[in-house]
Image (cartoon, rainbow, N blue to C red; front, side, top):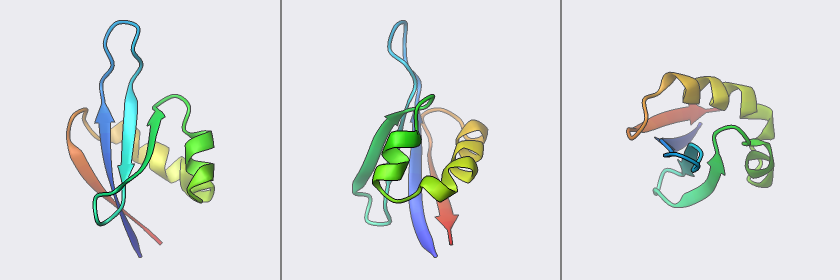
Length: 71
């Protein structure tokens, strides 16, 4: 089981919302716009988990680091 940490960052004015995806050692794996995750998730090999990750992201609050466990 892989452990990831997600941080959803609220944009302001013309700056869009972003997401930080980190591994269990808290190293940054991806930094992507909340409305365009496809390219970044494919790049790190999580394209099959995109729907699950996006559902999780829509549930978590902005500004809080949340733990996500994937098989």
